[in-house]
Image 1 (cartoon, rainbow, N blue to C red):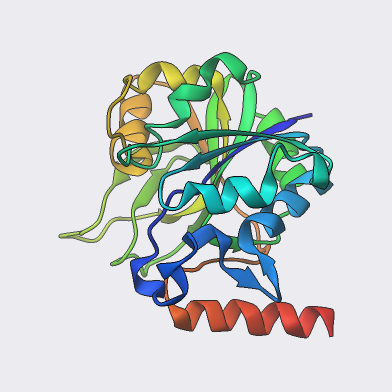
Image 2: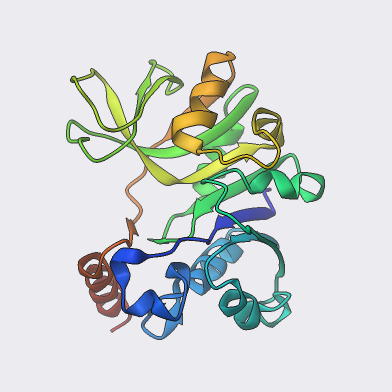
Length: 239
């Protein structure tokens, strides 16, 4: 069972101002509860006992709220980026503390994923270096996409913007299972992007990186309109 999760929580949230003038994007409340707390609760349901938060913008807001995690029944570790290190540049800092396999998610999305099912699918693969939630699509102008083989293994990554159409492509979403080996492909103290740099690098090296498809609800929140959509959905579920 996977017991650790890294959450990328350093975003500025410029398009969510004025809310993010005083709090970082992953701390935006949904029905009175910060998005990061929703993540902790959901992942805890699926066996996660230890979290690693990468922070940059207003890190003290997150650290003051969560502390060491004991109030939430988990352990929380932090790394504060003095300068942004891209989506995965900072996770290298946790290398000595990580188990062989861990979840990695973007903190600025709301997710009700069944992470246990993803873990079960991952365990069926032979020597994978990672797995990412993806969705088959023909509408990908605004997204990085992956081409897959018949076994669901990624064979090529295409970063946006796109200049042509591709067959059998999948929109890349913000939930991952990663093997610790992936950290060997991330340089020290370097701005490094997961979709544009890390994944093309591991695929070119012949590593096995797979897609995971599911219909569980998740939504990236980067505009006020998307925040309203998620808030309404959650309110309907709990009413």
